[in-house]
Image 1: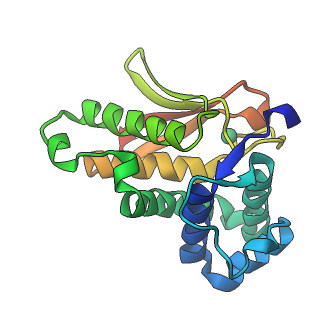
Image 2: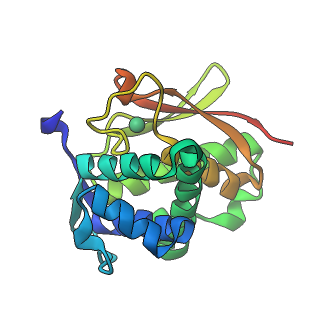
Image 3: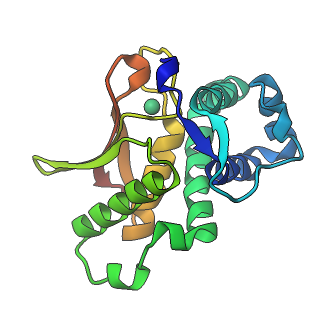
Length: 205
Ligand SMILES: [Zn+2]
């Protein structure tokens, strides 16, 4: 896996840490930074730029530390952090995300979902050309797929572990449609699949 150890740029690390702090509070964030070996960011968030921030394996360790910190409640917390991450990205990097909210309102739901997810793919690729991600639209199902998922890099599990990603994908879809859709991780690199795949299900009513 080491040869696959991509780098996450500062802006994305900052986005995740600000989101984690919103959800966990400063003490909670500092604790997981310490337990995941990222104490250099305590009181010292990375700047808003595209320089290398952390290795993907370090980012995965941070996710693991948050999971350990919350125990049974971890999935929900990670999803909330993922949601907050997307909100932060829209707030701080609107030009990078290149999203035209007004034009979106004219499109049917399905097109809006495809639009926002394709924008997330290009935003990710813009921040890091190593990112291998795409939007799948097959047999009536839309899914967001990434081969270079940093959340589970180097991790092993019998079940999918990328809850933070589920939160971000769900929030992106909500941003574009105004609705909460069921998002499920059907494949995960941590359980031996060759990519992480997040399928958009039905909206919750
Ligand atoms: Zn993953």
